[in-house]
Image (cartoon, rainbow, N blue to C red):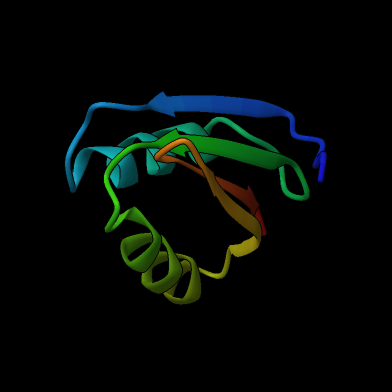
Length: 77
């Protein structure tokens, strides 16, 4: 499935909390309604992102894993 995005963050090789921090910084530079793609290799990133998105009102619209690379599409609200 191909999901469009406006900006990408490469957090591969980084451990928690770095992927989440990079996501937070990237979303600050984006407009409401834009989509961020985060690529990470830390298998626990999904849990952090889900909680963080819920708390701050963003939405993870799609997630997938391929070859140990986790991809998350987040829409900024």
